Length: 415
Picture 1 (cartoon, one colour):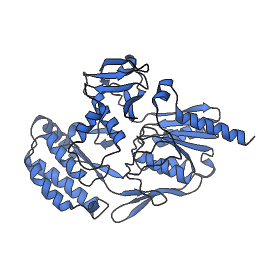
Picture 2 (tube, one colour):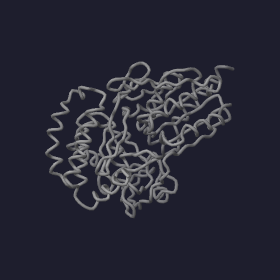
Picture 3 (cartoon, one colour):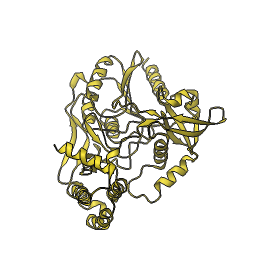
Picture 4 (cartoon, helix red, strand yellow):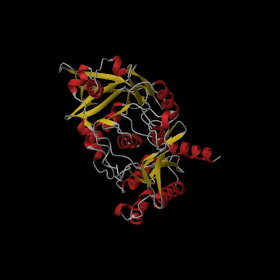
């Protein structure tokens, strides 16, 4: 019954202004939830009660759904950390039974980007996407999106915003992605420089986004080297991981590719670690307001994967993926290869709001097994690597080439 009431309220929010009673109930829910659960009683040195006083009259006079939820989101951002968000009903979606506040645009052109050396590079192209059909290739430079330069888009987006922000190169890539994708049955014009340096202008229709949440792959790169990659920590990841470990158990090396993985359900990190480590241990600790919870695992003895482990990361490796990568780096002596990770690691939960929107709020701090907080810091790779336009154009994967070189060097040393 409660879900139906929420859905009816959400529908009303699309069609009409939000009634004042619902606005104030929602405001009160957001403020009190954070007041009761935020792990730091000092609220990072901010006066949380004064913040309420500043925002209460603003939300009381704001009937429009988008503007109202933006105000609530701004209030949560006053604390200046990751994983705080208020989303309006149209941004809410469910993935594998989880309520999430960051629904991507419903349609995509299928381009993945990174901001490298002051240029927005195409680093990936979705299979069957309009970008693929138009001949877009990795290593192309996107110079304008709908007539605007990527840096200018980001500069406009950040104006007046406060709170937590990722590193500049991540924010530029993120805002560009939001402009490339968009509503169904629309197109976007992009101006690019191709692999020969020639300018092109392309109009790319947006196609419906693939609704699949967890995309998991495992294979052999060679008879002695296994490979796994997945996009999010959710769904039946643990079962798929267990099956893949069984199939790759006879390999002497395993590559776990977390590039672009932005995290997900925190409990899956120790669950996966358990299959890779023989004895008991912990990935670190979550520190709540009045307690703490070790991210421990019992170990699986001789059933644990025994080969050498490589973890591939980049700047978009975030949240649970960072916790897992750091845990493997310290507890399993896995070699981490790539770019400094995002540094957005705080544990959070999501709850529905009376408007039909949702609140994502932080409940704990996370520290690794050595007592180091990863928020704003991220995971430092053992072997630094980054994307380059030359590698992308040539179809090279420097991460996998590094793994291959180390495997050959190790093999030569034992002869």
